[in-house]
Length: 309
Image 1 (tube, rainbow, N blue to C red):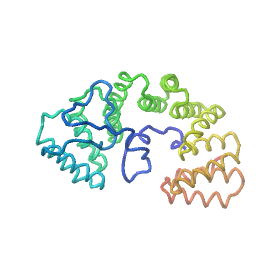
Image 2 (cartoon, rainbow, N blue to C red):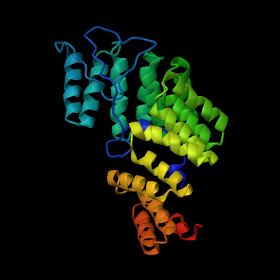
Image 3 (cartoon, rainbow, N blue to C red):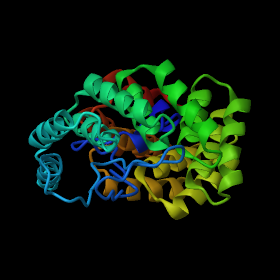
Image 4 (spheres, helix red, strand yellow):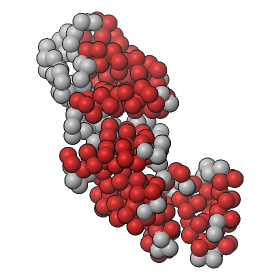
């Protein structure tokens, strides 16, 4: 059940068109008028290719406008080509920080992760304290498996912005993964201090209590998160806690709701197999073990449900 025990923030942060871990491709749209330079320390560059309202009289801005049209059409490769041509036309233009960020994001969409890191880095050379750029690069580092580089970027964000939640959440989940509960709790409480109703704070603390075996506290915190965001991962984790607490009806309700949202999630069938075993419905248990395997769960892992007490 490790899938429902440690959930890294990459599931919140990494944007991929054909992945179910997508949350939002962007929180903001930045509009920059011609000749205006992006700000410095507290820039929040958009997490998706940003819409830019510019005078299209110059070649540079015509190329940007063409890129934006291709982005709207989701023609990532052609949009990337227009952005490259714009940058080559005016390599010293301060707006290139934003264009490099857009270019890197388009490359993430196309799984060109090494190129994305390179271009996020070039954008950060121009705007070194841009928090969203750092978060985006950190997310790509995570997907590439470069944990040290990701931690460095998340830590820098934490230094720059005392209220930023995603960096603290991810660092907290990584602390949980290595069993450092004190550090994890400190990070999750930093989120809660800035925003007492933060879903990420409730989720993080819920996962921490679950890891520590305090399933009642875990359930309480996960429930607070679910009130705001009833996503399948949270529901699956709470169902797992309910099973340990032998609150089988509650577990069944969470599993059913989660499966309605993500019917191809093998681990939810594994949870339901466990539930059916606890209800002595052995035929249904075997059916769900087979469904879990069909939907990607390792066969050896799935069959362990048969031996659970």
